[in-house]
Structures are given as C-alpha cells and as structure tokens.
Length: 255
Image 1 (cartoon, rainbow, N blue to C red):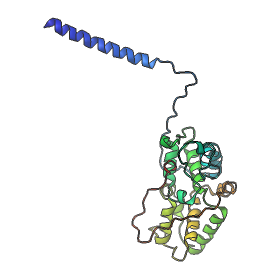
Image 2: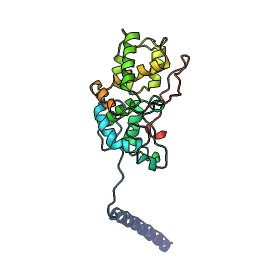
Image 3: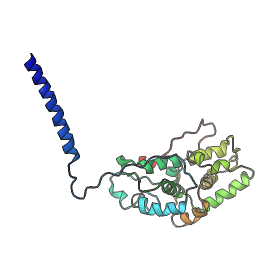
Image 4: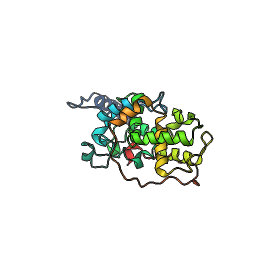
C-alpha cells in the first residue's frame, strides 16, 4: 500500500515538473523572422469626444487609413477593399450614414471588426478617432445641403436653442434618423418644426444640425474636396406615431 502511494506521489510530482517545463519552453520560443504581433485594440474611452471633432484633420486621417478600403469618397470602392471578398460599407451613402450614430462608428474604429477585415486603429489617439468619424459622418452631405439646412433651420426654428446640437455627449448617441424624428415631433429641448418641410428639406436640416457638434471652422473645407456622387435615396422618414427612437444604427463594419 505504501509502495503504491509512493508511486502515485512520484507520478504527480513528475507531471507538475513536466508542465512547468512545457510552460517555460513555450514562453521561450523564438518567433519566426518578420513576425508582427497582432495589433491590440485601443481602450474604449467615453462614447463622446472631449472636444469638438475636427473634420479637416479627419479628412487627412481618412485619406490615409480608410480610403484604401472605403474609397476616397466613402463609396466602398477602395482599391484594397474590392479585393477583400466581402462588401465594404459605403460610408458616403446617405442611407448608410444617416442610420448610424457617431458613438457606433467610433466603437468600430476603436475595436475593429476582424470578421469584416476591419482592424482596430490603436495607432490613432482618442481625439483622432473622433475626428475621422466626424469626417466620415459628413461625407454624404454637400456644401449645398449644409447651406440649405442652415437656412431652413434659421427660418423655421429661429428661436430654438442649439444646446442639444452642440452637446457632445448627446449628439454622439443620435443618428440623423433620430434627429429627423426630433425635427418632426420635437422633444423637451426643441419644439417640432418640420410640419411644412419636405423629406429632402428635413434631411438637409439634419445634416446641418450634425455639423453643430463638429469643429465648424473646418467642415466646409474638408467637404469641398470629397463629396460623393449623387445617389438615389429610397429611405423614408420615421412616422410621427413611432415610439421611442431606437439607438441602433449601421456600424462601419457590419454592412
């Protein structure tokens, strides 16, 4: 009995020693030449920017980091993107951009979506990620859209407070679809003022209102060099009897 117990103890001790050796050997394995460790995802900070995003800086980042896949104007036709074997989201199309919130796109830029070959951009600072998201969000709107939206807003809602539309924490959560609903129905900060506006008018106003949370000094110059071609938009505005607006949208990596 004692002999059998001694054998069991010896085998257990040997197993522990072997496992320790295996662990040490695995840790000491030399990686192959030219090995590049996977890029870790950046830490996900607050889902709103610390300061107004700059679209001019965002345009520079987009051209370097995003255009190879998403295309120069965000139409999903980048040279690298068409070789991926999966559809690349056309961020510059209204029906894609209007249904997403800045916070959703910021999350994808930060964490990536490797199932769709979208890497996390840990090399960008938190503010740079917000800058490029702001630029991508503005791609579907032309200078004419923004000018028209501003004119309509000032005419139809001259006494409205713009506090909501400059609040980074709130605007980062709102898609343009939800902004359109606010225009039609109002909320506790903004009265309804879209009753006499056409759908095109309301979309122009939502595009303008989005820019109020950006660094507006750079928005026009950034868009002047990269405006997508006109496309036919088939979406319709949410009905006025709809319930609480949904926070869901179309993240960059899920189209």
